[in-house]
Image 1: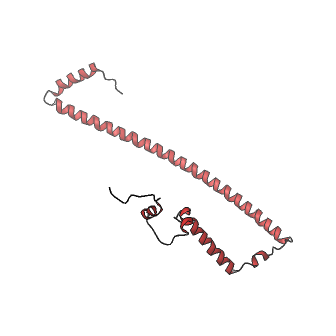
Image 2 (image 1 turned 180 degrees about the horizontal axis):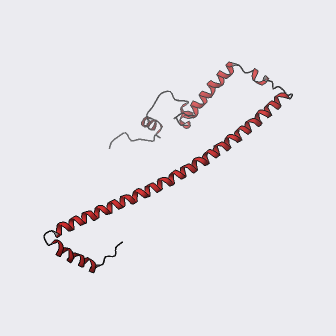
Image 3 (image 1 turned 60 degrees about the horizontal axis):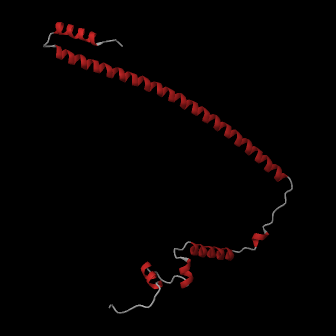
Amino acid sequence: MIDLGLTKLAVIGVVALIVIGPEKLPKVARMAGTLYGRAQRYLNDVKSEVTREIELEELRNLQKEVQDAAQSIKSDVENSISQNMAEVENAFSDSSASDTPSYDSAPFSSVTSEDVARKAREFRRKKLVRNSAIPNWYKQRTGGKLHVTSGAARVARFRPRGPTNSSFF
């Protein structure tokens, strides 16, 4: 930058006053200020554009590196999967070629559809009992829920009763 001190600015102001004149000096100073402001904004825009381009280029390089790393990882995973699949297929073909004992499904042959339906009903009933909103103490005391009662009605029903004085006075 240009090194302008207070004395240099005073000399420039006196020369401008003599050359331009006192009538036109404010207009010229205003014009010089606006031009100086435009020049600063233009330089700031150029600087920000350059930094933006540099950052964009860095991001592109980073993206390319990440894509290359991801591609190499993907190829490694695919290779290991294909090797493992080949080993499993070889092991399966080797075991099917040798004599393997056949497993009998005798324990499951005695199960009938009626047993399955009965067990399903029992499971649903037990699940309903477990997930019910009625407390167990209430179920045990009343023997089950026959009709819906409000909370206030239950409190009134189970409130301990003692000797009450029926007279107001």
